[in-house]
Length: 186
Image: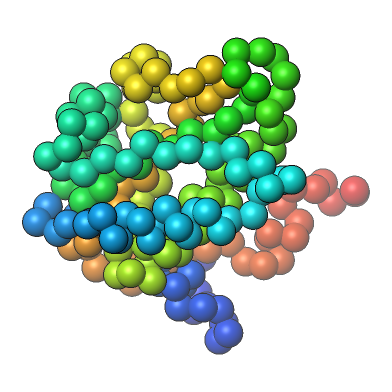
């Protein structure tokens, strides 16, 4: 069971200060320069064979893309994600075009690495990020019509949060991380 604990010294504050807010300042803006830095951080993420099997559909309030994405949010995420300064739809390139030939068997993992880089960069820029999957995947896929071989995986809401950091964050212990996936007899 996760429990509250202070992070050990030596863990970077960008990692320990990260949390997923449920309130964003609707007046905050992620400008072109900030968006460029977020995408630049992604560019430096590791990937299997340097395949970089990720793609992003980024949209801000007032942009046509934003109006295309909002109707597909689930009510649970629409309550807070609509106020974010930037919504990012994440995609992984799993296949070569419309074939069954794998482009990268590690596409989803590599996308996760890219999103982690974006999240840390956002934190360094004073932005908060909330990753989520509460949206109509089928409807959003139909709306955005990704190229063959590409799949929408998740979304990220980014912006200035109005939520205070949670006072007692809970995390699994390191001992739990080392033992959880294996049976005691393994």
